Amino acid sequence: MSNVRVRFAPSPTGMLHIGSARTALFNWLYARHTGGTFILRIEDTDAARNTPQAVAAIFAGLQWLGIDWDEGPMADGTTRGDKGPYFQSQRRAIYDSYVQKLLSSGKAYEFEGAIKFRTPKEIITVPDVICGDVQFDRTQEADLVIARKDGSPVFHLTNVVDDLEMGITHVIRGEDHLSNTSKHIALFRALGAEPPKYAHIPLILNRDGSKMSKRNEGAAVAEYPARGYLPEAVMNYLCLLGWSPKDNREIITMQEVIEKFDLPQVNRANARFDMDKLFWINGMYFSEMSLEDTVPLAEKILKEAKVLPADFDVNGEDRNYFRAALAIVKEKIKLAGELPEWMSFFFTDEFSYEEKAVAKVFTPEGLKLLKQLRDDLTEAPFDVVNLELRVKSLAAALGLKSGAFVHPVRLAVSGRSVGPSLYHMLEVMGRDRVLRRIDKALERFSKAQAAAV
RNA sequence: GGUCCCAUCGUCUAGUGGUUAGGACACUGCCCUCUCAAGGCAGAUGCACGGGUUCGAAUCCCGUUGGGACUACCA
Image 1 (cartoon, rainbow, N blue to C red):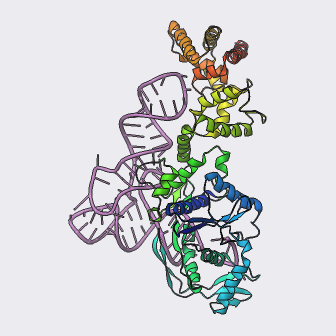
Image 2 (image 1 turned 60 degrees about the vertical axis):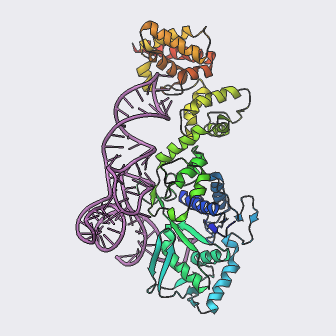
């Protein structure tokens, strides 16, 4: 156990921003790397934004990502740590006493009802672990308001007081706070305390370089589980924004990152969020995930998409069918969010047919071949090996490529031109379902063609 | 406007004076193939610009340009 104490201090805004999550991640990594303590503190002094739901969004986001904290409020309402309370809204008396202290030492004064900090007019150097020494000329700066007319303390004061009271050793936060830091250092000094070490990490921008605000796509952590992303993938991707294992690897376990992570190696340039790369990383994790681990995830997503009825029991009588279908689809996709689109036809005969594919595949010739194959499928064993054998020998006998049969069948049984491996799909669906769907397609599209002629 | 930060392929990055500037995503072509993925192979694309320093600069310095942050009695 080292004496490192770092904190993540979000304010409840109704969502956990992906950039905030990355800040939390880097604090967490540093704490775990050094064997220090990771603290969660809720900066909820803005009463307007402070709702239980907004705080819950922070807990939910961190928990989903797998970022745990050693001190602070827990999601179940309990508190860990002896430096609390960890909600700023409950620390008013502490702030008041510090304001008083500054007032009585003459370092603050009343101004039209508010309290101003007599900012030292000097050049202050911020020794930043990531950015190096950064100088701020405060000789011309106006004094800083630390308490409003109504007596409530402002951010700069509460932030400094809490970091001081909670024994924070390293402040790891977004670069947007770099220019605030000279004020914070001045406050620490006025309070007779040594400022913590500072590490300002680069910001995450949109793909086009603009600021990622809460309304932008991908800004809210909650979007990721909703879209079927895996927390391990999001964490892995976030680590790669502003930090690198430096050995040309993209996929890396949190255990390894914890071992290698350190502050001086963090990049100084802002990074842009690339959803394509996250998608790819997610695919890497998704393909490594066991089928059984995928089941609950698939169940949730398929039920939300109404592909499965709400009372569908994944361990009930359709257990094997569900798993078999999931297994052959899983290896074709990168994201659980693709599951509804890829699996809906397994569970209903009432699907639509891709129009372009119909025009291309259900030609008179295509339907003739489909009929021929259908009649060939009634007797032979209905398994992958035999199915493939039947299709290939049938095609060979006619001097055709197997695709001549494959495409019409795929379209007939799924309505799609793309999907899982056909022979596996047929085996999973079973003879009855397959024949039924082929007959249905045959009837419908033969009639349509007769009518067209 | 002022202050501060930043600048290697489209994007994320490796690189700390001497490299054919490496990897990954995305992109293109080919192979494989029942489609789509995966996989394999090949390819295109980059040191923002201009000055220095140096025998030698992506690497160090200055300037320009561009991007970002801050500039609240918000956090």
